[in-house]
Amino acid sequence: MNYEKQAQDYYSKAPLIILGSGASCAHGMSGMEALAEYLVKKIDISDISAKDKITWSEFCRVLESGTDLETALHQVATSEELTSCIIRKTWELINAEDLGIFHEYLQNNQRFSLGKIISHMFKSSISNINIITTNYDRLAEYACEREKIHHYTGFTHGFFRQLSQPKEIKVNRKVNIWKVHGSIDWFKSPLEDIIGLPHLQDIPKGYGPQIVTPGTQKYQRTHLEPYRSIINNADQAITAATSYLCIGYGFNDEHIQPKLMTKCARQGAPITIVTYALSDATKRYVINGGMSNYLAIERGDHDDQSVVYSSLEENPVIVEKNFWNIDGYLTLIT
Image: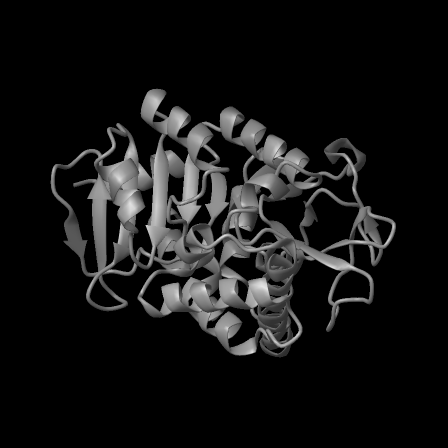
């Protein structure tokens, strides 16, 4: 199987990059399981209503039964107050981990693996790269800045960032980072507008974090700004792209899925997936879902082994090399 040529061919089409939770977990950020444990441990129910206490007890019971966090939050409808508690505690965990990674990279003066790919892509004639992510953290932004590349997330630059249009940021090279579920530095102010406040240790008084956690209120919130515009821009980017590179993405998000499936399953656009372990949804939608041009790579039995699934081959191939993380993938395409 000539997976090297396939990978290089797909990459040569300047793929849109899709980052899932696996891309952040590779840096030690908490996944859904760790977040669930944190919420159960940290949320204080002493001051919430009796009805919410019952709801929270039911939610914890569902989690303890082995149900994952996202499914649990869909099964148990939480009130606005309880949802706010979940959002604030989620922000608390992810923000602390994000800042920890930032300080670690300051000390080590390391490059982010994602930044290496972005810099390599800009060696061509392209001037804009689109990244779509479901993650709340700022690792994609750090990766760009470490490479001295400007990024745009829907806001102006600076310490008090306000919503802006893409055309307002005019630079020679730019990475558009479409954060469809919000970001830990987005807040609703007391004036009810959305602003960006970077690198805060705590949530300012009167401000509300703008991240969309899983659950029954997720769909309602994403119809509001800035999510509506961000998702619209992400949809346009997916529609315009001719190739896709998914990093740690599990094919479980309804804001990305429809357009992506249309391009790959219906129109044959090539897609590459690199991840620690392919999710059941990835296998269902990509490998067994009728896609005609795919290359999916997951970790084998150890770090220096990869399992390669290709639309060119009927069966997966085990390779005694690391191609399943970003650094390993880079050795495959360069």
